[in-house]
Length: 498
Ligand code: ADP
Image 1 (cartoon, helix red, strand yellow):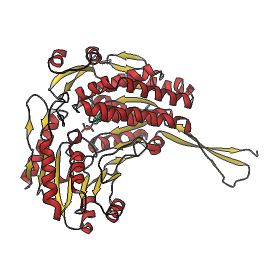
Image 2 (cartoon, protein in one colour):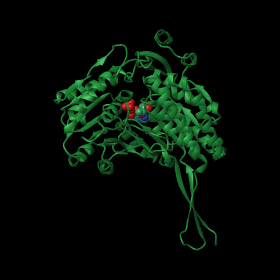
Image 3 (spheres, protein in one colour):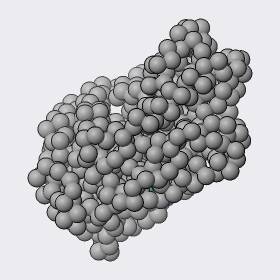
Image 4 (cartoon, helix red, strand yellow):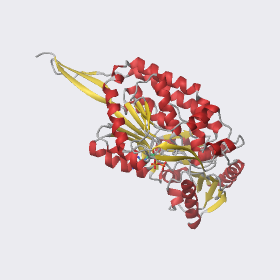
């Protein structure tokens, strides 16, 4: 399996070593095979070849991990002071920085994001996220309430919610995992991480680094496996207190239905069909560049991708020509080719899904101005694609594609725009390009979206909550709001006049 790698890809010796080792579950401070002995394959989407065989967790392994997570929650982790928790998270951030080169290569081998983007664009954000939440660890406090009742004191205490199962997708494996783990650990929870089956490798690396940082065994465990086995077992397990999920609407709904059985806390970051709105008074070059990166970044495999382009009619042709030009400038290729500006999709299933949507759009009258084809039989590649004239009711306009496909629609006036922009079951993000502050203020108030970017696209920061309205989810990643989701409030009533 490593021959395929050595023949074509230039990676660090540490990465080669990591790939040679057995990819096992991290339970307590041990790396162990699954009880069943089963494994699953993880592929390199740039080549379609096997990267590693990975231990496949199932119910018995989940039982072990939950037992150990509960013991750590009530024992070793509880004994760690809040400021020490912060210090440990900072230490983990330092280790991530120190190994960012290896981690980036491993991540890009597994998910196909161009390695420079992972190294310079994403890994610093992972470390920053841990540092931000490290700062919160010793700032979790309660309040007292004056009820006016004589001889009664009421005190609110904030406590960790308990054992958290973090179930994350493959588009940004380390980032998505970190968005759950950092606030959960800062709050004093323990975490069982279930990475996506397509991208388990950096999750395991992160689990090893957490142990190296001195985070007690059982506080962060990693269970690679399939959704319907490892994922479902975590969701059903009565010893798990909270599910923190990022992924598809369908799976988010299924998780919520099951979780309600034991009233687990659930936070969900789901899909989107986010509009990039370009007004006639916008800086058109800025708008084109930002909207193009808003949809084509990470091959469109971004929950907040700007997959609907709403352009004021008078500039529609200019903007569309510009977006088509930007799409045609993109070099689609291997995550490890320095000339690549857009990597492959994650899997052949994803290529089928994306091309299926484009064919649906064509069938509904959509015109494909550029792209619309899968390329390169040796990896999972799809060309950046721009579609116009698809009717508003077409599935290509309404559903999340999770690929490099943008559908463009004209609008006449700002009055007609808001309904159009909000005409979606989703509400994750929106972007507005305009030079007129009246337009941006007006629209950002009425858009139903968790993030609104004005004259920019896609910014995220550890201190800024990110999440969705409507079908895009419940809860937020990032900021104080995220921390709150890993805390329970206890009201302590003390009668001091007995
Ligand atoms: P995507 O469409 O991006 O692959 P999914 O929602 O299918 O997103 O997957 C996101 C995460 O949810 C992955 O880690 C996957 O293994 C997990 N998952 C899938 N099905 C289930 C399930 N029934 N229960 C729990 N987790 C699941």
